[in-house]
Image (cartoon, rainbow, N blue to C red; front, side, top):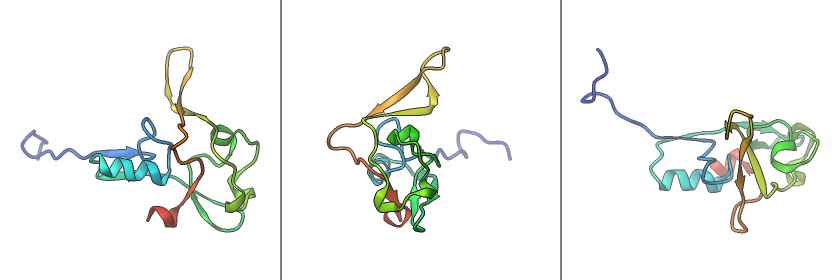
Length: 119
């Protein structure tokens, strides 16, 4: 049956928890997204050296933390804090491939969440 406005139900999904408005893939972002009407949360995970499932998109810690290391090589307790400005690599600002940055505030979550915390 073709989709029409009468039988099409719109759903809201928060990509990485809504990384335009909150630090991506954080418990803070997911709570914010749900509070603001998201019905689906999209996230990514990586396993740390000590077997904790960390909620993060990149395997490398470079983009978010400025550290040349990998999540899988680091125990969860030793994961570095986020940088003040976190590049959103999926969102180009202009044709010269400059990217937007999320600028953290002092109130923002500054580190990774575990998948267990999110559930």
